[in-house]
Image (tube, rainbow, N blue to C red; front, side, top):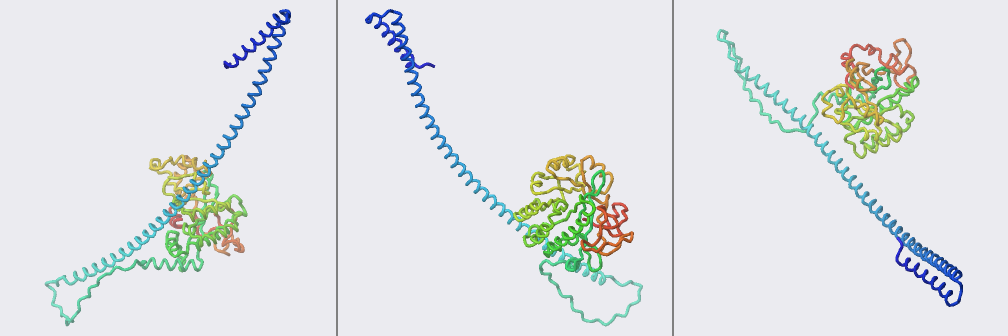
Length: 480
């Protein structure tokens, strides 16, 4: 929009040019045409002068505005930097508060676990006292019954022996005692400790197969202990005693060594085979116990793609600072993790994948349970696809019937494990010949030789090769 001052200047320039032409025509006596030409020339010069002066004035104004804008931009940058510094300080304070809260929660959880152990010991002690009181009451009742039975009427009078003065039995007052282990548990404890010290640890292998091809893809190493009478103790029998005595780290290290030896032997024939090795939560939690295991795994990190470390679901749900740090150390060395002993389907696949979990073993009965669709966040049939989006494979374990295999195929389950395919079978002892008379080898890598990745005559005891039905195999092998 044209300003009023511009219109006024234009009118003034026209008046000045017209006045100049009129003066030349009337005073100087110049003709009208020449006077008009002079007037137009004067008007043109005035217009050019005004345009140039306005352009110079506008350039000066624009330079001042640019300088003001630069100063405002600099002030804004300083304010943004100050806000960023304050935001960083606030985030640091929040992180410190979160760490402090996590430490406090971990301390409370530890105290609760200690209280639980004390309650269990108290329960065992009370049960022992109840048994003692019940036994004493039964004995007293039996004695009273014998004394109250009258002799038969037709019986001849018996010759009474001379009466002796019998002192009444003393009254025994049972006082509370500290929790003690029953005799059976003490014997088991001694047997387990002696077996560990004498290295009577046996490794059983149970295959995991692809579905529906049933091709062996992995093996799970299952630990067994033999007592002095060669009686085999399964994990449920000896794990509580091993964890109570602090020997779990020694057992895990020995089992890990044997698993690596088995894996090296298996990979001679098949590079795609893998071994699952269990590790206890107590080993992962204790830095002194975990350090030798980490050094051993560091020395064998070339086997990391085929060596899977397995933990329980409860351990992952109660991770502390030490467990998280040790898991991260294993993941940095290329090792992958598996979760077993799954009790429900409330699973966070993104969080597990970030921690390095690549396998989850779920019992077939839990997957096929119709109640799980209402108690979990996802239907069991969609669990395999959900885990697959985060690079986690679902393994259905404890499969014991063909019907379960058919139903699991509808759930898109890729791997299966159970007594239907093969029970856990022991490695053949060092130097023992195979069924065909082939020697087991020099035994430098592990106690037994492996000809193929399948569980065959060269890796298992000859006495356990017959498959039988699933129930007989389960009773023979015991729980995992």
